[in-house]
Length: 70
Image (cartoon, rainbow, N blue to C red):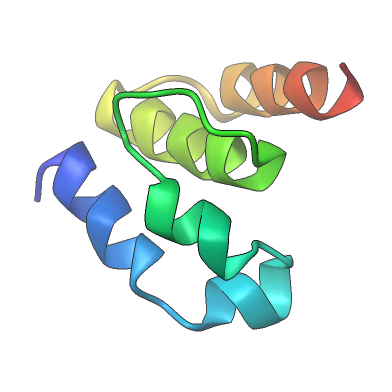
């Protein structure tokens, strides 16, 4: 499955709002190709991209840490 399609399917999951604290508004506006106001949506994209591009887990994790600490 293509990374963009994976992202679209994840954005349909109700668990995003309940477990990850992503607002319905952010989910509706979310785009795989554009930067989101939600750091959690950006983390989801980083994980999808990391897997799709065969990046090392520690590389993906370091990118996520940088993003959430900014």
